[in-house]
Image 1 (cartoon, helix red, strand yellow):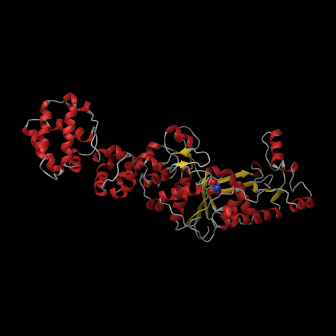
Image 2 (tube, rainbow, N blue to C red):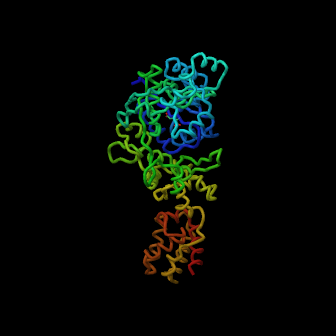
Image 3 (tube, rainbow, N blue to C red):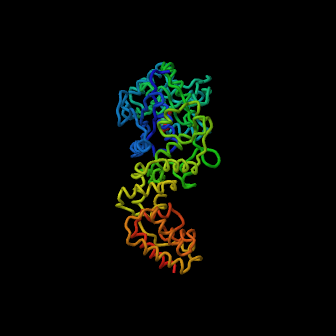
Length: 504
Ligand code: GLU
């Protein structure tokens, strides 16, 4: 093992960030921090045709929200930069040429039209050990002709020469020993005609140059692994090869297969951390932030999608995750995404968070509903009173709007069938009794309320629900005298009178 743990997340800026990608980030980060190592963010933007404006900024915004810090990256810098592959373009050709010289790669001059023709006539055409002998490349064209083509600047790519009959075996830290037969893999392009490396070349060269010790990436990259393993070997770096971990997929809630953006639309839940609008297509994908997740809930949920600490514990903060993270507890099988469970984590974290911590996160959701300029001290109390009842941040509006605005609709069905003049008189008198008293505590209000009921020979239980509906509008909310104390005597009296009119 290399002395220092250095891991990387290497996204291609081709769109937003799926939660599967965030989980890959998280596992990289937890592993790095557990081992006092470094977490590197490398932008793999060699495929300029798939570049999407804003994708890199978006990734950084997601990391910030998640509370994950990058040690080296395009913004942080570091000793192994640049960290954006397009800025490293000039260094890759030399490596590709080395492979050509050693006989592990070759120049291919076939134009895209020529290859397209092949595809038309040959079903499942692949550029590989069997077809390359009939194609225009440095394996079939005489050496001098190749040299003059290159001298004349004839467009060409460099392809890996996959061995014909070889087992490519390697150890995966999650899946154990894995082997591919070399004939299963085509002769991948390593260097494109425009001089840009492809992912396969760049990922290996950069993992080497950046001294990456462990690669955690999604299972979808497993088929590329044999190409990478061979490249590490062909470059003569096999001893420095990172250890591999291909993470199981996050699966659809129903059936099998990778959770997709479309599943989010289908079921109405987010699959990206933050709302994302694709600059090229204008398509919008919903985010967990806007759905009302707190980062702690989101991270906790993601960590448990494919990992546990071997006990029944389900709630972990980032420090605990770092302390307890271990590779041997990553599951081999894919984890089904369960939105109800995700919300459960969020509710647990809302409950466990202090009102002060929640305040800046709750405010935008209240503002969105037109509730502005609320005094922070008042809001803190309100958050404390209702947080137990909130699953997602927008619930703070649902659960607490009556603290800011008086109800205009009342659940009168819950009151009217049992309403009578005696109750009407009770509330008028109650309002009268409290009217000259300022700053009555919840307990004092309760005593006045109960004493008056006893005096009138009425059941307290039958008066509490109407009182709640007067103050709140419906059958919900925290303790009713706490609400009255919080909104104040004047407002309580005002609401009693308004409701009495409506109950008539
Ligand atoms: N650029 C690849 C991606 O978009 C990186 C895969 C890897 O980690 O090797 O995910």
